[in-house]
Image (cartoon, rainbow, N blue to C red; front, side):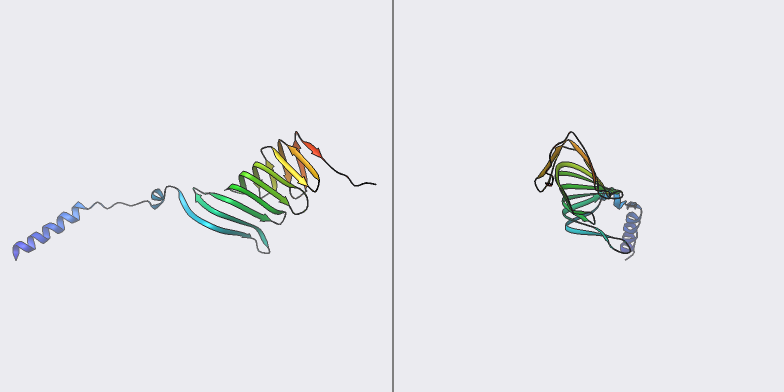
Length: 166
């Protein structure tokens, strides 16, 4: 019996001093990925109204940056903002791949790259674009659209604009 007790005490001592206890940093194990989701709708609200609605087929938030696939975005001034890829950094959405913008009243824009600043409601198209409203068309190399003032500033444009007959 004494031998069994000595053996058990020896095993306990070996296990006690042999196990190394360390703090495991969970954030390091996740390698920056905070959340991953599919087929999700985000609704941004303030105290009174819905500010915007965004839908994505797939998304990941890593290191404070939200990356979305097949982004569809709506706000009070935008009927639709769509892109294959959208990346949220602070108040800006970086849009890449088949960017499509439809105003509530006015033109539809198509481009490959754009940046939408939600705070000041300005869309910067950073690639060649095509715009259409009814029969009116416009092409250019870059554009800045202020949604609040409904003003467009574009570079190197070619446009066909139809005016009302008087």
